Image 1 (cartoon, rainbow, N blue to C red):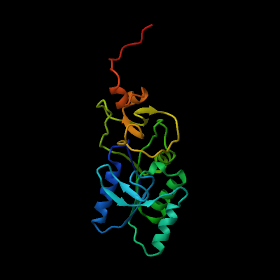
Image 2 (cartoon, helix red, strand yellow):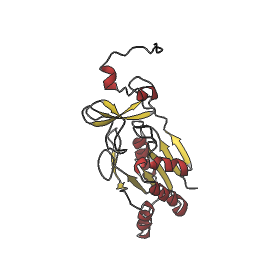
Image 3 (cartoon, one colour):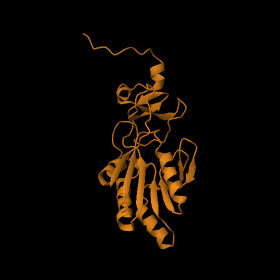
Image 4 (spheres, rainbow, N blue to C red):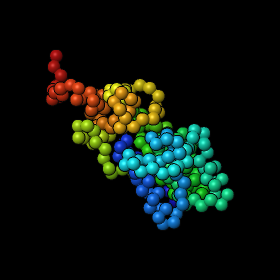
Length: 214
């Protein structure tokens, strides 16, 4: 029975690496898949991981009909056994609906990979729709770590090493950008709430928490 599966986690927890591994395992068994991605760090039409692995993909541009694309490919004699979607959080809700149609109407497994919340801790529309429609939601077991050593649960956007909480929801960046550029850092909830990035933490002396006094 075909499924729509949503693999979720923070940045830097191995989502793209797992997507590449799943594609490799299936191609090694003679299966052929279509990989969709959006705004990958390696550029348009690429699926890449931070381990340096890269493969070709189909750029799922805004307004693209993913279901229609596959129907066209298959009607031309193309063989499609499964679908992988990376950076699924960037897709529009209607494109997530199209992924569900691919499962239900074409009988293909769809494996979608993405983060659930943005740098403001708000759900991405694409991720919200995946949570609503997916047959299964899998949380990746590889845990990204905050600079303090705790499990990272939140994605922070940084400019010059300082956390920002305003701006467009989608600004392409990465966790390994120079401090002066727009980048991202994964933090535990405690330090996300305090807007304390690794740069700001090391720029000041961290005192133990005390109860507020008047």
